[in-house]
Length: 176
Image (cartoon, rainbow, N blue to C red; front, side):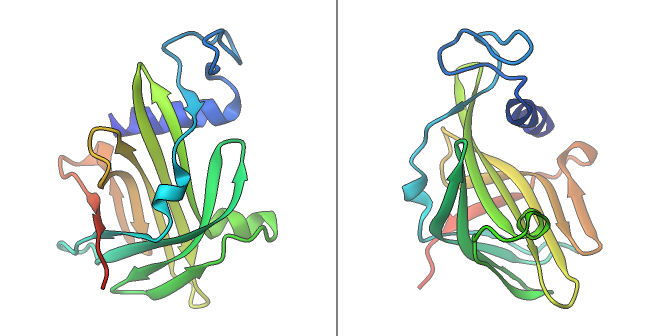
């Protein structure tokens, strides 16, 4: 299911999805096609999301600070990613060179697929030591405090939800 949501999200971004009006869009569209929908991006400001360590997977915490920009329904945030193996990576959310933005972002976007709303949760972070973290997942409207992960990469550790029965999650946490 996770890969399906991710692929449908990519179709929405590429213009092959439907439209809010239900009249379709892109290459035909239709009422069951994924569409970008509005959501309360402000509600994510000041939140933190944690994935606990397990086996080779390190503990990771994503801290979401302020909305830095909004582009076509995608909200980019400033914040940081804390990892037990790489340390803290800061994300300014500022529009820098395109390549830099691709490798350093916290991006949230809402989509609706067959009547169900999902928040797409995408994070990429790097540091000066060459460490890299990528998180692609989604939040179901029925479970707003949990990110279900599709892809998680931390340097040499890689998780793909289609290649294992393990379910990796980031849970919303209260930091003191």
